[in-house]
Length: 282
Length: 294
Image (cartoon, rainbow over the protein chains, first blue to last red):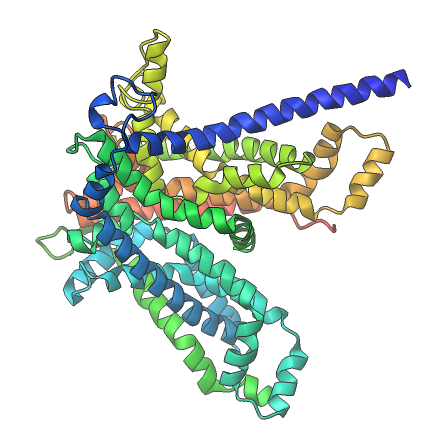
C-alpha cells in the first residue's frame, strides 16, 4: 500500500513538471507574437526608453502607414489573387491527372506517376534562372501569371500523389453501376470521384495555399514592380535597413501574419490535422 | 466499364495539362539549368559552353565554402534537434490528459506563418538594442551582438538562426510523431503495462521502434527543408556580416540576381540538387524500415 502511494505522488510531481515545461514552451511561442503586437501600436520614440511598458496611447497610424506606403494592402490583395487562382487550378489539373493515373487503365500510368514524383525532390532554386530568363522573354516577368505557373507546377506532385491515393480507394462498384447507367468517364470524374474525395481536395488545397502564401524567393526574383509584389516580398522590402521607424515595421509584420493567425484560430484542428496528413502521405 | 476506363482520348485529356506544365516549367528548366552550369552566361551575353570552369571556380570560392558549411550545419542541427524535441513534445503531449489540443495547436502555429515575417520578428528580438538585449540590460548585462558576432567555428548568428528554424518547424515533426503514436494499438500498451513497464520504458521499447518509419519521413523533410533554407537567413542577416552566414540558397540568389552570373549560380543550384538527392537516398536507405504490423 505504502509503495503505491509513493508511486502516485511521484507521478503527480512528474505531471506537474510536464505541465510547467509545456506552459514555458507555449510562452516561448506566444510571447514574441504578443511583443510584436504591443510594440506595433507604440510611439516609436518611447520604444528604446521604456521597452516593456504598456503603450500609453495607441498609434494606429503605424498601421495605415505600413498599409499604404509599404504597399502592404496592395500586396495582400496580390497574394490572395495568386494563391486562390493557384489553388483552384492545382486542384483541377492535379485531380484530373490523378484520376487518369489512379482510376483509368493504361500502360504508362506507373511511369507518369514516377515522372511527377521526381518533382517532389527538386528544389525550386534549381529552376529559378532558366525560368527567369524564359519568362522575361515571353512577358511573364512582373506579371502575376509568372508566379501562378511555377507555384501551380510545384504544387502538382504532392496534389497528384495524394489525390491518386484517394481515387484508388474508391470502391469499384460505384463506377461499374455508373457505367451501366450510361454515365460517361467525364461525368464519373466530376460527379462521382471528385465529390467523394473532398477530404483529399481539402488537404492538398490547404498545403498548396499555405506554401504559396508564404513563398518568398520566387516572388522576389520574378516581381520587381511594387504594385505587383506579394505579401512576403513587400514586407521584406518595407522592413529593411533603410527604414528607421521601428513601430511601423512592427505594424507591417503584424499585418503580414494576423490574417493567417485568425484563420488558424478558427480552424486550427482541421488545419493541423490536414497538413499533417498531407506531410505523412507526401 | 473496361472500355470506358481505357478511353485513350479521355486519358490524354486528363493528363495533358499536368504533363505540359510539368515538362515546360520543371523538367526542361532543370535540364537547361544543368546545361547553364557548364556555361559562361550572364545578363548581357548568351550562354557559351566552357566545360567545368564554373565548378572549378566553385571549389576555390571562399563564400561557397562557407555557404556549404553553413548549409550542412543547418541540416545536421535541424535533423538532430527536430528529432529530439519533436519526439520529446510528442511523447509528453500524448501522455497528458488535459490541454493536449491547445498545446499542440500553439506549437504548430509558426509552421503556417510566413518565415519571412517570423525571420524579421526574430531579427528584432535579437537586434543589438531591442528585445533580448533590453531584458539583459535591465539585469545589468550587456548582451552579445547576436546576429553580427563572427567568432568561433560555427558563429553565433548561425546558432541563432538554427534556433529560430527549430522554433518554427518543430511543431511539424511533433505532429508527424503524434500521428504515428496515435496509430499504435492500445492493446500493445496495455500488454506492456501488465508486464510491468514504466511509462518511460514503454516509450523506449514500444513507441520508439514503431516510430521508425515516421522518423525517416520527418528526417528527410527536415533535411531537404534545411538545405533549401532561404527566407530566415535572408531576412535575419542577408548572409552578412561579410558573407559569414551565407547558405547555398542565399549564395545562389546573390550570384544569380545581384551579380547576374547565371552560369555560376546554376552550378550552385546543381550542387544543391545533388545534395538533396544524396540526402534523401541515404535517409531512405538507412533509417527507413518496412512498416511494422500494428
